[in-house]
Image 1 (cartoon, helix red, strand yellow):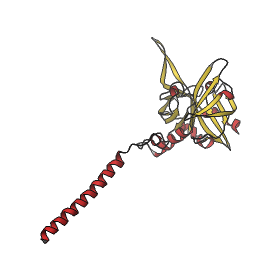
Image 2: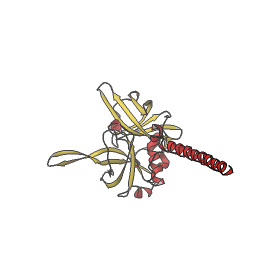
Image 3: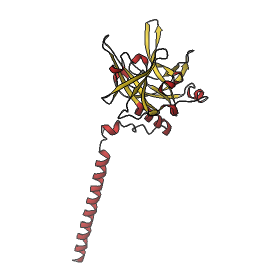
Image 4: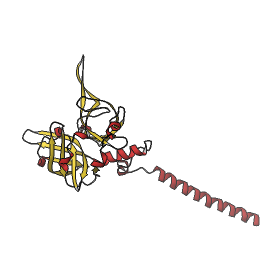
Length: 254
């Protein structure tokens, strides 16, 4: 009788242990199988772990400060979409973009962030020669302003920042979609000081801030190159022309 009782107790104990292990395993499988939310996927922190911590920090800086700039010129029916960089100087907020992306006046120019529109307070500078625009804005929800003056190379730092085959990143809105983050390399220069980058861009990428892997802001996307062949002209979407930020008159924001 005692042996039977022992066997019954052993069976019951095994059943309880088995049930406990089963519940734990099921809970673990359910936890691991739970899909992330779109918010988690689209987070500025969701950057490939295969990259260096330095590159991840730079990409986070790029994505968190990038905005879409839309501008309308109602009389001529002109509409443009460009990419801009939201930055802070002193206690004021600004957006840096390309001048050719601003056909309209300040009242017809808006900053778009995740479907929300923020107004242009004032055009600080519209530079036709260097093709850049600085727009003063109010604080923008959903973006982190770039500390502009601590992000730009100084003095001899420019030599390394602009060195051939230096890795670069930028975030933009090609074809009015995105934000998309793209990598590339510096491949050459023009006599006028513009930078050639092998990467990819399309209409809407103009104005995207270009960063070195170690986080220096070196320029902004102007255009893609155009080539000619026996078959005629062609757009080279993988060769970008970038303007260096040292040509910007930063005193305008001070």
